[in-house]
Length: 167
Image (cartoon, rainbow, N blue to C red; front, side, top):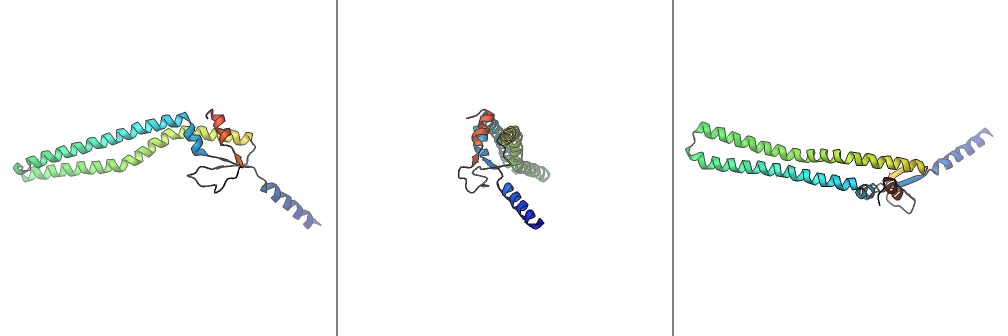
């Protein structure tokens, strides 16, 4: 008898847990609809332009020094020529290091600008999740591909956008 009651209790527990409320939010849609995102994208564009301008300035400086060296090379002493070649190589190396660090620097700036936006969206999702008594919320963005198929379900995207005051 105890085994039968245990089996019934176990079955009821599995049934109850199988009926968990799951919702989904398209984070890409929410984040792209926020005015803060548009402002951050504008700042990132300006930042990228400045990074590229600095790199271009370095290229111009290198080309200028190289031309000056090539023009003066025939009359240079070996010691002076070696010194100028070394300067050019060092400048070329600084340019290569700058190019390598540009992507990392840009990503850091992007993270810095997007973190408050993502935190704000997460807070809204948390509030909607509690209000809708959801147990799980999954990102249904196209790029995430966590959900392979959504047929209706509990789409919380409109509620999250309303909570954030966006259309």
